Length: 366
Ligand code: SAH
Image (cartoon, rainbow, N blue to C red; front, side, top):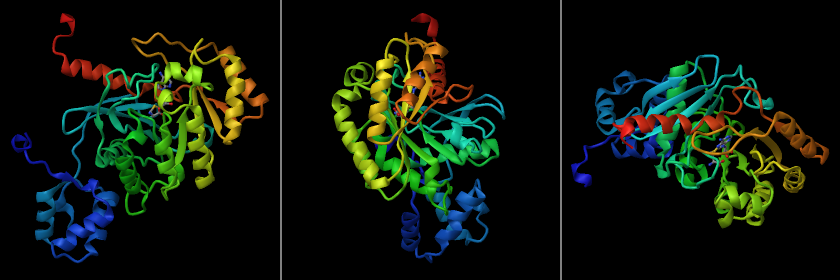
Protein backbone atom coordinates (compact mmCIF):
# COMPACT_ATOMS: atom_id res chain seq x y z
CA UNK A 1 0.00 0.00 0.00
CA UNK A 2 2.86 2.32 0.81
CA UNK A 3 4.17 1.83 -2.72
CA UNK A 4 1.14 3.42 -4.33
CA UNK A 5 1.18 6.50 -2.14
CA UNK A 6 2.92 9.52 -3.65
CA UNK A 7 6.34 10.23 -2.16
CA UNK A 8 6.00 12.69 0.67
CA UNK A 9 8.72 14.99 1.79
CA UNK A 10 9.33 15.21 5.52
CA UNK A 11 8.45 18.59 7.03
CA UNK A 12 11.72 20.08 8.21
CA UNK A 13 10.03 21.05 11.49
CA UNK A 14 9.87 17.33 12.22
CA UNK A 15 13.61 17.29 12.92
CA UNK A 16 15.30 18.16 16.18
CA UNK A 17 18.42 20.25 16.00
CA UNK A 18 20.60 17.18 16.58
CA UNK A 19 18.83 15.25 13.83
CA UNK A 20 19.23 18.06 11.34
CA UNK A 21 22.87 18.32 12.23
CA UNK A 22 23.30 14.58 11.68
CA UNK A 23 21.72 14.87 8.23
CA UNK A 24 24.08 17.68 7.30
CA UNK A 25 27.11 15.74 8.46
CA UNK A 26 25.94 12.76 6.44
CA UNK A 27 25.73 15.00 3.39
CA UNK A 28 29.31 16.11 3.98
CA UNK A 29 28.30 19.59 5.16
CA UNK A 30 29.87 21.48 8.02
CA UNK A 31 27.80 21.13 11.22
CA UNK A 32 27.51 24.89 11.74
CA UNK A 33 25.16 25.05 8.76
CA UNK A 34 22.48 23.83 11.10
CA UNK A 35 22.41 27.23 12.77
CA UNK A 36 21.86 29.01 9.49
CA UNK A 37 19.06 26.66 8.48
CA UNK A 38 17.27 26.91 11.83
CA UNK A 39 17.46 30.67 11.60
CA UNK A 40 15.78 30.67 8.19
CA UNK A 41 13.10 28.24 9.31
CA UNK A 42 12.19 29.51 12.79
CA UNK A 43 13.36 33.12 12.88
CA UNK A 44 12.91 34.38 9.34
CA UNK A 45 10.08 31.93 8.57
CA UNK A 46 10.97 31.64 4.90
CA UNK A 47 8.52 29.93 2.58
CA UNK A 48 10.96 28.30 0.18
CA UNK A 49 14.44 26.84 0.47
CA UNK A 50 15.48 29.19 -2.34
CA UNK A 51 15.38 32.01 0.16
CA UNK A 52 18.22 30.51 2.21
CA UNK A 53 20.67 32.79 0.46
CA UNK A 54 23.69 32.10 2.63
CA UNK A 55 23.67 28.40 1.69
CA UNK A 56 25.20 26.88 -1.44
CA UNK A 57 22.63 26.26 -4.17
CA UNK A 58 23.48 22.55 -4.00
CA UNK A 59 22.58 22.40 -0.31
CA UNK A 60 19.37 24.34 -0.92
CA UNK A 61 18.46 21.86 -3.62
CA UNK A 62 19.21 18.88 -1.44
CA UNK A 63 17.04 20.31 1.31
CA UNK A 64 14.22 21.06 -1.11
CA UNK A 65 14.40 17.56 -2.56
CA UNK A 66 14.03 15.91 0.83
CA UNK A 67 12.09 18.27 3.06
CA UNK A 68 9.06 20.53 3.01
CA UNK A 69 8.46 23.78 4.84
CA UNK A 70 5.01 22.95 6.07
CA UNK A 71 2.05 21.08 4.71
CA UNK A 72 -1.01 22.24 6.60
CA UNK A 73 -3.61 24.34 4.87
CA UNK A 74 -5.98 26.83 6.45
CA UNK A 75 -9.59 25.84 5.71
CA UNK A 76 -11.45 28.35 7.76
CA UNK A 77 -10.91 31.22 10.13
CA UNK A 78 -13.70 32.30 12.44
CA UNK A 79 -13.74 35.44 14.55
CA UNK A 80 -11.96 38.75 14.12
CA UNK A 81 -8.62 40.28 15.13
CA UNK A 82 -9.64 41.34 18.60
CA UNK A 83 -11.79 38.34 19.52
CA UNK A 84 -11.18 34.68 20.09
CA UNK A 85 -10.49 33.12 16.72
CA UNK A 86 -10.93 29.57 15.63
CA UNK A 87 -8.62 28.25 12.94
CA UNK A 88 -9.38 25.07 11.09
CA UNK A 89 -6.50 23.34 9.28
CA UNK A 90 -6.42 20.50 6.78
CA UNK A 91 -3.56 18.06 7.27
CA UNK A 92 -1.71 16.29 4.45
CA UNK A 93 -4.04 13.28 4.75
CA UNK A 94 -7.09 15.60 4.55
CA UNK A 95 -7.94 15.24 8.23
CA UNK A 96 -9.03 18.40 10.02
CA UNK A 97 -7.75 19.91 13.25
CA UNK A 98 -8.36 23.21 14.90
CA UNK A 99 -6.65 25.77 17.08
CA UNK A 100 -8.14 28.60 19.06
CA UNK A 101 -6.29 31.91 19.32
CA UNK A 102 -7.07 34.24 22.21
CA UNK A 103 -5.54 37.68 21.70
CA UNK A 104 -3.75 39.42 24.53
CA UNK A 105 -6.63 41.85 24.97
CA UNK A 106 -8.80 39.00 26.23
CA UNK A 107 -7.40 37.46 29.38
CA UNK A 108 -7.12 33.68 29.24
CA UNK A 109 -7.00 33.67 32.98
CA UNK A 110 -6.09 36.34 35.48
CA UNK A 111 -2.36 35.68 35.48
CA UNK A 112 -1.65 35.83 31.80
CA UNK A 113 -3.69 38.72 30.49
CA UNK A 114 -0.76 40.29 28.62
CA UNK A 115 -0.20 37.17 26.59
CA UNK A 116 -1.46 35.99 23.24
CA UNK A 117 -2.66 32.44 23.92
CA UNK A 118 -2.99 29.61 21.45
CA UNK A 119 -4.92 26.45 22.23
CA UNK A 120 -3.57 23.61 20.07
CA UNK A 121 -4.69 20.09 19.25
CA UNK A 122 -2.56 17.04 19.93
CA UNK A 123 -4.55 14.33 18.13
CA UNK A 124 -7.17 13.96 15.42
CA UNK A 125 -10.20 13.04 17.51
CA UNK A 126 -9.82 11.55 20.97
CA UNK A 127 -10.09 8.05 22.40
CA UNK A 128 -10.99 8.97 25.97
CA UNK A 129 -14.70 9.48 25.49
CA UNK A 130 -15.37 12.04 28.20
CA UNK A 131 -19.14 12.22 28.19
CA UNK A 132 -19.41 16.01 28.06
CA UNK A 133 -16.80 16.70 25.37
CA UNK A 134 -17.33 17.33 21.65
CA UNK A 135 -13.88 16.08 20.67
CA UNK A 136 -14.61 12.49 21.55
CA UNK A 137 -17.88 12.32 19.62
CA UNK A 138 -16.22 11.30 16.38
CA UNK A 139 -13.82 8.87 18.06
CA UNK A 140 -10.08 8.66 17.68
CA UNK A 141 -8.32 8.82 14.32
CA UNK A 142 -4.61 9.32 14.91
CA UNK A 143 -1.86 11.11 16.76
CA UNK A 144 -0.57 14.35 15.34
CA UNK A 145 3.07 14.32 14.31
CA UNK A 146 5.37 16.70 16.12
CA UNK A 147 5.58 18.92 13.04
CA UNK A 148 1.79 19.17 12.90
CA UNK A 149 1.90 20.46 16.46
CA UNK A 150 4.73 22.90 15.73
CA UNK A 151 3.04 24.04 12.54
CA UNK A 152 -0.13 25.03 14.37
CA UNK A 153 1.94 27.64 16.18
CA UNK A 154 3.92 28.80 13.15
CA UNK A 155 0.91 29.07 10.87
CA UNK A 156 -1.13 30.91 13.47
CA UNK A 157 1.69 33.38 13.98
CA UNK A 158 1.97 33.90 10.23
CA UNK A 159 -1.79 34.39 9.87
CA UNK A 160 -2.18 36.72 12.82
CA UNK A 161 1.07 38.59 12.35
CA UNK A 162 1.70 38.26 16.08
CA UNK A 163 3.79 36.05 18.24
CA UNK A 164 2.11 33.41 20.37
CA UNK A 165 3.52 33.64 23.87
CA UNK A 166 1.27 31.31 25.79
CA UNK A 167 0.48 27.84 24.55
CA UNK A 168 -2.07 25.44 25.99
CA UNK A 169 -2.59 21.86 24.86
CA UNK A 170 -6.33 22.05 25.39
CA UNK A 171 -7.55 21.51 21.87
CA UNK A 172 -8.61 18.24 20.41
CA UNK A 173 -7.04 15.07 21.76
CA UNK A 174 -5.22 13.80 24.83
CA UNK A 175 -1.69 15.20 24.72
CA UNK A 176 -0.25 12.67 27.15
CA UNK A 177 -1.46 9.81 24.94
CA UNK A 178 0.85 11.28 22.30
CA UNK A 179 3.74 11.92 24.65
CA UNK A 180 6.65 11.21 22.29
CA UNK A 181 5.46 13.65 19.64
CA UNK A 182 4.37 16.13 22.29
CA UNK A 183 7.87 16.22 23.79
CA UNK A 184 9.49 16.44 20.37
CA UNK A 185 7.24 19.38 19.51
CA UNK A 186 7.63 21.16 22.85
CA UNK A 187 11.41 21.05 22.48
CA UNK A 188 11.20 22.99 19.23
CA UNK A 189 8.49 25.27 20.59
CA UNK A 190 10.56 26.01 23.70
CA UNK A 191 14.17 26.22 22.44
CA UNK A 192 15.61 29.66 21.69
CA UNK A 193 16.70 28.38 18.24
CA UNK A 194 13.09 27.27 17.62
CA UNK A 195 9.93 29.19 18.44
CA UNK A 196 11.20 30.26 21.85
CA UNK A 197 8.12 30.16 24.09
CA UNK A 198 9.21 29.83 27.73
CA UNK A 199 8.33 26.53 29.40
CA UNK A 200 6.35 28.38 32.07
CA UNK A 201 4.06 29.45 29.27
CA UNK A 202 3.47 25.96 27.93
CA UNK A 203 0.60 24.11 29.59
CA UNK A 204 -0.25 20.48 29.00
CA UNK A 205 -3.78 19.49 29.95
CA UNK A 206 -4.61 15.85 30.64
CA UNK A 207 -7.70 13.86 31.45
CA UNK A 208 -5.55 12.06 34.03
CA UNK A 209 -3.20 9.47 32.49
CA UNK A 210 -1.31 8.64 35.68
CA UNK A 211 1.69 6.75 34.21
CA UNK A 212 2.26 9.44 31.59
CA UNK A 213 2.08 12.17 34.22
CA UNK A 214 4.96 10.40 35.96
CA UNK A 215 6.89 10.16 32.71
CA UNK A 216 6.34 13.85 32.14
CA UNK A 217 7.64 14.54 35.64
CA UNK A 218 10.87 12.76 34.69
CA UNK A 219 11.42 15.08 31.73
CA UNK A 220 13.75 18.04 32.15
CA UNK A 221 11.33 20.55 30.61
CA UNK A 222 9.34 22.58 33.17
CA UNK A 223 5.98 22.42 31.41
CA UNK A 224 2.92 23.42 33.38
CA UNK A 225 0.44 20.70 34.12
CA UNK A 226 -3.34 21.09 34.13
CA UNK A 227 -5.53 18.16 35.07
CA UNK A 228 -9.11 17.94 33.85
CA UNK A 229 -10.58 16.72 37.10
CA UNK A 230 -14.29 17.49 36.72
CA UNK A 231 -15.23 15.25 39.63
CA UNK A 232 -13.91 15.13 43.18
CA UNK A 233 -15.02 11.57 43.91
CA UNK A 234 -14.57 8.37 41.92
CA UNK A 235 -18.31 7.99 41.84
CA UNK A 236 -18.83 11.27 39.95
CA UNK A 237 -15.68 11.02 37.86
CA UNK A 238 -16.42 7.42 36.78
CA UNK A 239 -19.73 8.55 35.39
CA UNK A 240 -18.39 11.29 33.12
CA UNK A 241 -14.78 10.29 32.45
CA UNK A 242 -14.22 6.62 31.57
CA UNK A 243 -10.47 7.14 32.02
CA UNK A 244 -11.14 7.25 35.75
CA UNK A 245 -11.94 3.55 35.79
CA UNK A 246 -8.46 2.85 34.53
CA UNK A 247 -6.72 5.45 36.71
CA UNK A 248 -8.96 6.19 39.69
CA UNK A 249 -8.34 9.21 41.89
CA UNK A 250 -6.00 7.44 44.26
CA UNK A 251 -3.73 6.42 41.42
CA UNK A 252 -4.01 9.83 39.78
CA UNK A 253 -3.06 11.60 43.00
CA UNK A 254 -0.08 9.34 43.50
CA UNK A 255 1.16 10.54 40.11
CA UNK A 256 0.38 14.15 40.98
CA UNK A 257 2.32 13.93 44.23
CA UNK A 258 5.25 12.53 42.28
CA UNK A 259 4.95 15.35 39.76
CA UNK A 260 4.93 17.94 42.54
CA UNK A 261 7.97 16.46 44.20
CA UNK A 262 9.90 16.45 40.97
CA UNK A 263 8.77 19.76 39.55
CA UNK A 264 8.05 21.90 42.60
CA UNK A 265 5.44 23.63 40.54
CA UNK A 266 1.79 24.38 41.04
CA UNK A 267 -0.65 22.07 39.26
CA UNK A 268 -3.99 23.40 38.01
CA UNK A 269 -7.23 21.47 38.30
CA UNK A 270 -9.72 22.25 35.57
CA UNK A 271 -13.25 21.72 36.79
CA UNK A 272 -16.15 22.31 34.42
CA UNK A 273 -19.41 22.90 36.22
CA UNK A 274 -22.22 20.74 34.85
CA UNK A 275 -25.65 21.11 36.33
CA UNK A 276 -26.75 18.20 38.53
CA UNK A 277 -23.73 16.16 37.49
CA UNK A 278 -20.72 17.47 39.40
CA UNK A 279 -21.89 20.74 40.91
CA UNK A 280 -23.21 19.64 44.31
CA UNK A 281 -21.71 21.77 47.07
CA UNK A 282 -20.54 18.58 48.73
CA UNK A 283 -18.33 18.01 45.66
CA UNK A 284 -16.84 21.45 46.22
CA UNK A 285 -15.90 20.52 49.78
CA UNK A 286 -14.18 17.30 48.65
CA UNK A 287 -12.57 19.12 45.73
CA UNK A 288 -11.06 21.69 48.09
CA UNK A 289 -9.56 18.94 50.24
CA UNK A 290 -8.15 17.18 47.19
CA UNK A 291 -6.68 20.37 45.79
CA UNK A 292 -4.98 21.10 49.09
CA UNK A 293 -3.44 17.62 49.14
CA UNK A 294 -1.24 18.51 46.17
CA UNK A 295 -1.40 22.29 46.57
CA UNK A 296 -3.27 22.66 43.28
CA UNK A 297 -5.14 25.69 42.05
CA UNK A 298 -8.70 25.15 40.83
CA UNK A 299 -10.07 26.71 37.65
CA UNK A 300 -13.83 26.49 37.52
CA UNK A 301 -15.26 26.66 34.00
CA UNK A 302 -19.01 26.87 33.41
CA UNK A 303 -19.91 24.08 30.98
CA UNK A 304 -20.45 25.07 27.37
CA UNK A 305 -23.28 23.27 25.69
CA UNK A 306 -22.39 20.91 22.86
CA UNK A 307 -24.81 20.11 20.03
CA UNK A 308 -26.15 16.64 20.59
CA UNK A 309 -25.20 16.41 24.29
CA UNK A 310 -27.75 16.92 27.07
CA UNK A 311 -25.52 18.74 29.61
CA UNK A 312 -26.07 22.28 30.88
CA UNK A 313 -24.19 24.79 33.01
CA UNK A 314 -25.56 25.70 36.43
CA UNK A 315 -26.91 29.20 37.17
CA UNK A 316 -24.41 31.96 37.90
CA UNK A 317 -25.62 32.06 41.48
CA UNK A 318 -24.83 28.38 41.87
CA UNK A 319 -21.42 28.78 40.20
CA UNK A 320 -20.65 31.52 42.73
CA UNK A 321 -21.79 29.34 45.60
CA UNK A 322 -19.53 26.50 44.42
CA UNK A 323 -16.58 28.89 44.23
CA UNK A 324 -17.36 30.29 47.67
CA UNK A 325 -17.19 26.82 49.22
CA UNK A 326 -13.75 26.28 47.70
CA UNK A 327 -12.47 29.61 48.90
CA UNK A 328 -13.89 29.20 52.36
CA UNK A 329 -12.03 25.90 52.63
CA UNK A 330 -8.80 27.76 51.89
CA UNK A 331 -8.38 26.58 48.33
CA UNK A 332 -6.92 28.80 45.58
CA UNK A 333 -9.68 28.97 43.00
CA UNK A 334 -10.92 31.05 40.08
CA UNK A 335 -14.09 31.03 38.05
CA UNK A 336 -13.50 31.63 34.35
CA UNK A 337 -16.68 33.21 33.18
CA UNK A 338 -15.96 36.20 30.93
CA UNK A 339 -16.57 35.93 27.24
CA UNK A 340 -13.69 34.34 25.41
CA UNK A 341 -12.43 32.45 28.42
CA UNK A 342 -14.33 29.31 27.76
CA UNK A 343 -12.38 28.50 24.64
CA UNK A 344 -11.74 24.90 25.52
CA UNK A 345 -15.34 24.19 24.92
CA UNK A 346 -15.11 25.62 21.45
CA UNK A 347 -12.39 23.15 20.56
CA UNK A 348 -13.78 20.19 18.71
CA UNK A 349 -17.06 21.72 17.69
CA UNK A 350 -15.90 23.67 14.66
CA UNK A 351 -14.17 20.61 13.29
CA UNK A 352 -17.16 18.36 13.79
CA UNK A 353 -19.41 20.66 11.81
CA UNK A 354 -16.89 21.13 9.05
CA UNK A 355 -16.06 17.44 8.81
CA UNK A 356 -19.73 16.59 8.41
CA UNK A 357 -19.96 18.98 5.48
CA UNK A 358 -16.77 17.81 3.83
CA UNK A 359 -17.21 14.09 4.18
CA UNK A 360 -20.94 13.67 3.76
CA UNK A 361 -22.05 14.83 0.33
CA UNK A 362 -25.74 14.25 1.05
CA UNK A 363 -26.45 15.12 4.68
CA UNK A 364 -30.21 15.10 4.03
CA UNK A 365 -30.24 11.45 3.03
CA UNK A 366 -29.62 10.16 6.57
N1 SAH B 1 -7.64 15.74 26.77
C1 SAH B 1 -7.10 16.84 27.49
C2 SAH B 1 -7.03 18.15 26.72
C3 SAH B 1 -8.20 18.53 25.86
S1 SAH B 1 -9.68 19.15 26.59
C4 SAH B 1 -7.86 17.04 28.78
O1 SAH B 1 -8.81 16.32 29.01
O2 SAH B 1 -7.46 17.87 29.58
C5 SAH B 1 -9.38 20.72 27.23
C6 SAH B 1 -10.35 21.08 28.35
O3 SAH B 1 -11.66 21.43 27.88
C7 SAH B 1 -10.54 19.96 29.32
O4 SAH B 1 -10.47 20.42 30.63
C8 SAH B 1 -11.93 19.48 28.95
O5 SAH B 1 -12.48 18.75 29.96
C9 SAH B 1 -12.62 20.80 28.67
N2 SAH B 1 -13.92 20.69 28.00
C10 SAH B 1 -14.31 19.74 27.13
N3 SAH B 1 -15.57 19.96 26.72
C11 SAH B 1 -16.00 21.08 27.36
C12 SAH B 1 -17.21 21.81 27.36
N4 SAH B 1 -18.24 21.44 26.61
N5 SAH B 1 -17.29 22.92 28.15
C13 SAH B 1 -16.24 23.31 28.88
N6 SAH B 1 -15.06 22.66 28.91
C14 SAH B 1 -14.95 21.55 28.16
